[in-house]
Each structure stands twice: as C-alpha cells, then as structure tokens.
Length: 75
Image 1: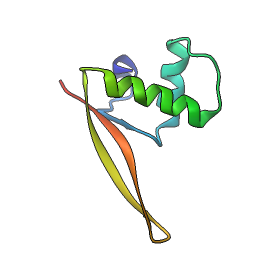
Image 2: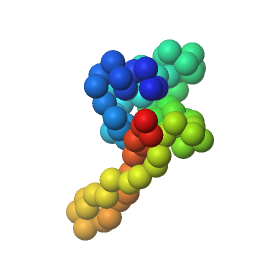
Image 3: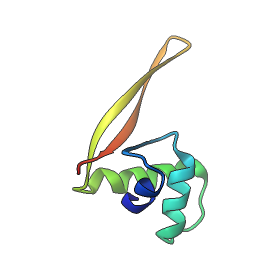
Image 4: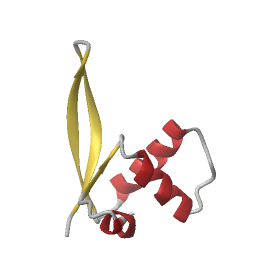
C-alpha cells in the first residue's frame, strides 16, 4: 500500500478510496471478493501495520453519525 500511495502522492487512505484499495489487493494477490469485504480486509491489514497510524473521518448522513477508519503514513 505504501508504494501505491506514494505513486498517487497520497499520505492517507480511507474506506472510500476504492481505487487504491483494489490496486493494493490486486498487487497483494488477494482473491476477488465483494468490494465491502475487500475494503475491510485491506483496512484490517493496515490497522495491524506499524507503518500506519489510525484516525477517523466523521460523517453525518441523514442525522446518523458514522465514522470511517482512515490510515495515515507515519513517515
């Protein structure tokens, strides 16, 4: 993921970055799954990585507060 983020001049990745997540999954040889499962699998891997710090993006959708995981490169 780090290589992909640097190619796209990005320092953060979140649930909505499907293009980055799908590219990461393809390079990591993760089998094709439903997009929601794929997103969760890649974000869970980033959560375990020492190279990323976790934060959240907060959203209000029709009065319902939602938080999305976001990961930022540490270096």
